Length: 350
Image (cartoon, rainbow, N blue to C red):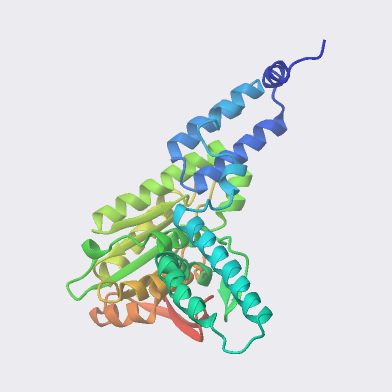
């Protein structure tokens, strides 16, 4: 008697899990964590279960409530408006081709099909206008994202290269309001930070030890962001985007973070942990679209240029803070920032 598919599937789920199966599920959980579907605590809890799981059914239960790779990669479903516009356009083309054929078969002459073509065409255009407007809005919202992975106008793979880029890509599409973090003149100073070499560190330590280290890093960053009056715009993995109403506060926070990381995690047995920080100031209220299209990208790319343990600031931040005399800048560099034309001056904060 042939086994039924249900019985075969049940036996398969009851099979013992191999190390390769556990690693596959652990990798999938990390991907969901990077995409923001799992919190640090959820990843930690499920990660511990992964390496204790004995059967495939136990592993499947850990991802049962998460979208599968097939569902995640599935194409966009057409809406009712798009479907109706496609049907309308198809009928418009077929009918007018028939009218042109009738005109040609009747000997040509005055091209009378022009009137239904024009009149009906206006109707098709009005029908499609809301759809075109929606597509245009989506395109404008997506436009800043490729800039994070392009140089001098040439596009590269859309996947971000660092935790800072992941955060910047997410913020560019979400565009959260920064009014609460803006100075009276509408400016906002953005701080981006991440751990240097975090991917290699994660692979070397394994998920559990990496998560313990990540929690301690995130605690240090959040403690000093709060004490310096910053607004956490977005965090993902080890990457942070924080907004401040003044460039001075941002520098004070960046210094405090670097000092605390060096003190608490510099000699960590699983470390050392070295954090990169980039700072830039821009107009966030009156020029909100340009702020997300350029200023966030500038701040993120400056952080990418920083070395571990270093704070890099844009020339705007330098101009706003150097007059006080207690903030020093050195090691001026002219760098090319991916997605932005020309070179940009950046300075090491000391």
